[in-house]
Length: 106
Image (cartoon, rainbow, N blue to C red):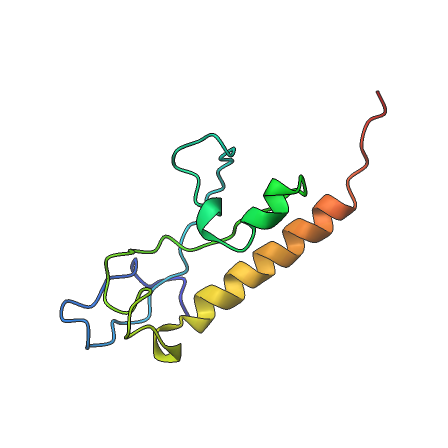
């Protein structure tokens, strides 16, 4: 259904719902705590990282300045369930793979 769709487009007026878009291309990045572009400090994962527990942050490429992003209009109607389901699947698979990796003995 989405394979032949074009990239997502933001609503011009913030009210009109855009057409269904193809799934976004995801890319992974590793940003260590000293990296000024790290976003972990704004999440619940920070306390785990501070305690020395490895933490992963999975998030969409969001626009913090858009209406409905952490403001009084931020509610369930702004949730992209398809994106959330895709991110959840990626997170589950990533954790499962990490949990089964055989580490080389040193």
